[in-house]
Length: 153
Image (cartoon, rainbow, N blue to C red; front, side, top):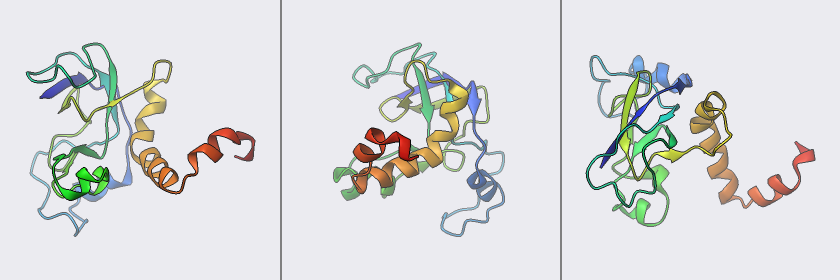
């Protein structure tokens, strides 16, 4: 189910510092010794693991790894489409090795496809702050307004 990809770009977020210094009291454990940080990574898929046939990604696709690197898909939050509050989420760079490395593993069904033509350097930081803004905007039905009225921004 895991997909290794080369990590060509990774943003650096203040959350990485919080995880590294164990300053986030909401996280249940101290950060594991030797943990690799990072949660805004973009790279190409170099191999697919078993059971990934229906994941919608293939070798060579450019994908990203977000703050939440994996969800359970079975808890009430996931079943309601609120994966950002999954009861069993895995945080990249905290529960799983993050994107500050050459190769990253991620669930094939949860990596984020990066659109063709979008530079990885531009896509990487959007995987954190951009996801936050997008999520809030969609919940407020703002996306249609924002996309169709770009001169306002």
